[in-house]
Length: 243
Figure 1 (tube, rainbow, N blue to C red):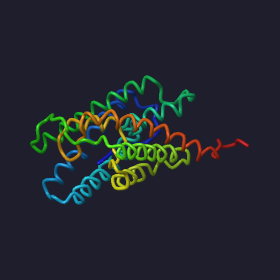
Figure 2 (cartoon, rainbow, N blue to C red; figure 1 turned 180 degrees about the vertical axis):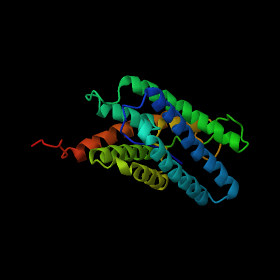
Figure 3 (cartoon, rainbow, N blue to C red; figure 1 turned 45 degrees about the vertical axis):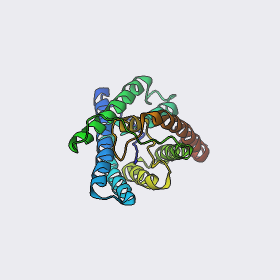
Figure 4 (cartoon, rainbow, N blue to C red; figure 1 turned 60 degrees about the vertical axis):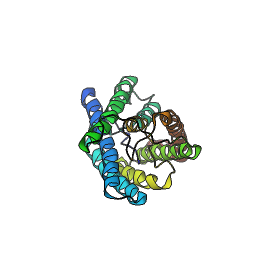
């Protein structure tokens, strides 16, 4: 991220859907505002690109961790359509799992929230509220970076769930995103909603609209790869009482 994104994979069914949708919208909005706003602030404070990325990544780590801690008990703190779709797929045979109705509500809320967050960040720093980014990110190595970043994110979240370690998600997910800012060529967007939102700002964290479809396609592929890795690695874990 400059990045991306996400989130707990557990859904508290007792929370009414409108509250969960509101949490996803607000959470994704604040996340993108943190990513875009810290990027603008960094470029105003220094011309050193390394320091700019460091500031951007640190702000994202802290912001994401807090958002997951705060909103995880409400909506699961996905903030990411890939995580939402992965949870639906992995729990599709569970009557208590995330259903199509929730997916149809979560994903638009995440996208609207991401766009609103980018506009809010631009407003706070006196930038044009909507200005399409000119930052081209269409190179093949960047697309590979998105596959890796998203696969790792999904593996982490659902691996934590399989290991009954989701309580560590705020720290673990935020730490992974912070690392992925640096070890992936794309700086780890890993989130279709955040990718769309960042197309609306022509600042440090922006992405050209023409690059958005490629990033989203690779993120979806990364989500599939991540789920496959979860199955490959965690199939040894059996329900309690099974032989």
